[in-house]
Every structure is written in structure tokens, then in C-alpha cells.
Image (cartoon, rainbow, N blue to C red; front, side, top):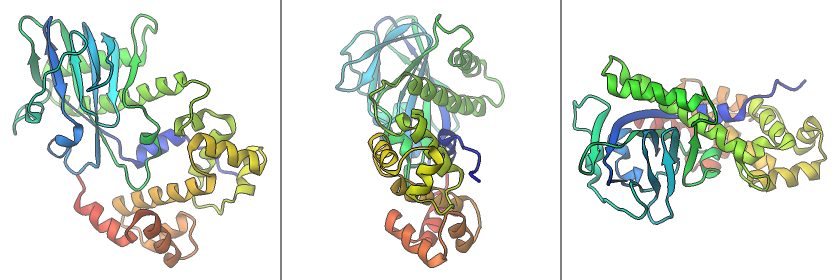
Length: 328
């Protein structure tokens, strides 16, 4: 009997250890530009020990333009949330084409500075306000979500969705960012994660029918069910025939559809997902290698060791030791 289908998006978000951190509020004048460096330039100082850092910005007042440096900007206004999933350098400005290269250290608060701290850009009273921060996650051994995301994600809660989740999150974020209440930093970090998940949901809902990628696979009736089953029981002795039978599609049709949407065949995806599950167990538990091997579908510790080293590049014990040494 098949296990109850899982929510693969939640599985991946847990396994990649998504974590949020809200650090600053940007106040922009009528004429302003605020440019952010590549996230990797400041990642170690803002989220030590995190493999990958992305930036997000919630527009809580006014309107401006934003975009990846070197690309055409988009207009944003109060109620919009913008995420740069790949950590690209980007700029917010009162008009398209404006630049303001700054020392990356200006976006890192001095030690002991209460968070969030404020950044002023432009001369005169502020007309635009952004609540800004970062999202950290793992990219190794397997992060199927990150590769499926564009360089800029934008979602909106304006007048079209009264009482929408994004608007609620932003209202709370603004109150916490300006109220100087105890625990604000922790509340804002959790709100960062919630806003990101809501942005992902909106992105998934808006995907064009011809789009491919892991998120497009989630949306597909048969591929989505296949992903849910593989996530529910990664340790099961899955084969293409058993998976195709479970989702009600022929072997060739499932293989073609899965590969077209997700970018790799089902069994290859399963092998990499097993290593992600195993890596999480190695990093966060003291479970023995034999127990982990059995739970992710390997009949012996030796077979698991070989597969892990082949896909990840190092043996499981080495991964565990390094992960614990680098833990944030």
C-alpha cells in the first residue's frame, strides 16, 4: 500500500534548511538609488555557515524600480515583495538606470547594533520604504528548488487580494521593524521565511503552461504525484514500473513527462533526493550509517557509502564531520 502523498515543496524547504534574517530598513527619498552587492560578498558576515544566501525586499510604502544589475528593471510599489533567489547584485531606484555602488560593509551592521537597522538613501524626506533581509539555504547535495527559480521573483498584495497573506506579513514586518519590541529580530526572521513561501506559491500559480522545471513538475497531475510518492517513501525499492503503476501512467509516458518537466529521469531524481535526505540525517542526528542507509533504500552500509561518495563527492562520515564543523 502506497504511503500518503507528501508535500514535496515543504519537504524540500525543510531539507535545505531555509532560514530567514531581516536586517535593515531602507528609506529612499524622492530621488534615490540603493544598490546591493552580490549576496556572496556579505554572506559570511550576515549568515555565517550558510551555503547560499538570497536577498528579499518588501515594499511597504511608495513606488520605485528594481532589477538585477545590468538587466531591465521592473516597477514595484507598496504591497510588492521581490526576491533575488540566486543572490545577484541588484538595485532599487526612483528611476530606471540609476546606480549607487557602495561598499558591501554598509549593508552589514556593526557588532552590537540592534536589528533591524536603517539605511537612508537620497536627500530629503523618505518617500519609499523597504523592509529588507536575507534567506539562507543549503545547495548541496541536492536543491531542486533553487535551479527552477528565475533571477527575480515578484509577488503582489495590493487591492486585488484584500486580506492577502503577503499584505498581512508586510504589515506585521513593518510594525516589528519600527516598534523596537523585544524579540523583533526573531519574529522578522520567521516572517522572512513565510513571505518567501507565499511568493513561491504565487509563482507556482502563475507559471505558464509551457514552463518546465521542478516547480512545473509539482503542478503536473502525474509528475506531481510521482514526486509526492518518492518524497513520502524514499527508502522504498522504487522502480520505473512500480512508480508508473502508482501514478496511473505508462512507463514510457511517465519517464518522458518527468524528464521533460523536472530535467532528469525519475530514478535519477530519486537517487539524488535520497542523498539529500541522508545528508540531513547525517548533519542533524547521531544515527548510525547503517540505519540511515536502510531508511533511504540501501541494503548495506557499504552500498550506501559508495552511492553517497559517487553523488556527493565525499564519504558520509566526512560529510557529517564537515557539516557539523560548519554548522551556523
